[in-house]
Image (cartoon, rainbow, N blue to C red; front, side):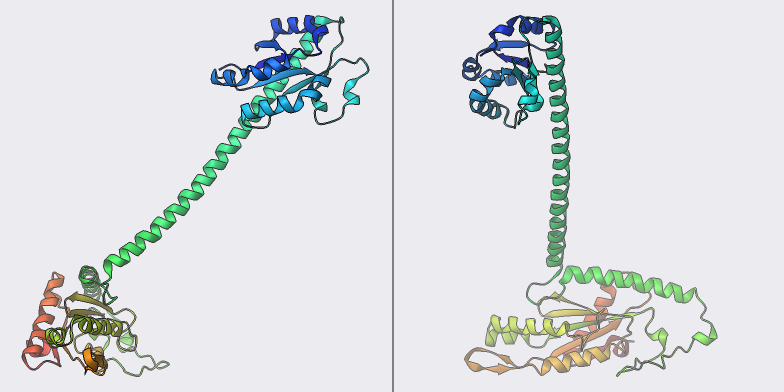
Length: 380
């Protein structure tokens, strides 16, 4: 790629052709001599840019430049697509034109004297033109560096912003994939994930109990400063190293759908889902989900089956008090059957505790519904 090219616009500069001829011989970059009209009409800059010549110097007599500045500037700027300032304005006066012309282009003035020291003036003009080309090159590189750096910053910010948006969308999508759309609680897949986590956590707690010795002074831990409305039943060992699940079924749900319609049945399911989120019934760390159809499961961490009775009773009583509306102003209520089982140390998979709770639920439904059955009390 060539460094650049020097254009000499000969209007009013005929007396200095001997200097320009020497310049053309010693210059390290090509020199073209033409009139202002030819320069503009020939479209030469565009052609040179296609050839890979990106920078140019325009040498023009000062008075000629003033009369042609708009034409030349508009052409050059439109060709380069950015502000162009590489002009050398030739002052033909011997009285120091640089001092007389302190304007926009004052730093680009160059004095020439016809018939005096041709080689010296040509060398000085060549040096000045090369200096401008070098500065232009450095300016282009700096502009390119700033532009590229700015692009990197902008792109990084955009990528970071997009990644955050994608992360938020992924979290929302993940949440939606784990939530039952109708009841707004966890779905079956999420329930099994939580059950497996709780099984592993409880298994570790049991291992800690078996491999730890509590000091005698810590065996009867009490909290004298804080009392709760409903004190837990039993010692700390009745809560640590165990968990329970409630298997819940809506009584006569098929009859509700057949009698009042599926929209009424959906309102019943939504009401139960809303009740599961009521912290007066369940704790913050209790996990409720839809197992399938009208069956639901609640995971109660650090709770044995006996203590699981408390939230079960609260849930069944609150739900039975809700009045639902069917077609033609029909009003009805719904009861729950609940089976409870706690984690057994020999449980190797989630299905083990689910099977026991389901067996207790089936027992409740077979013996009249609207009741709570503890597997550990009935079958052990």
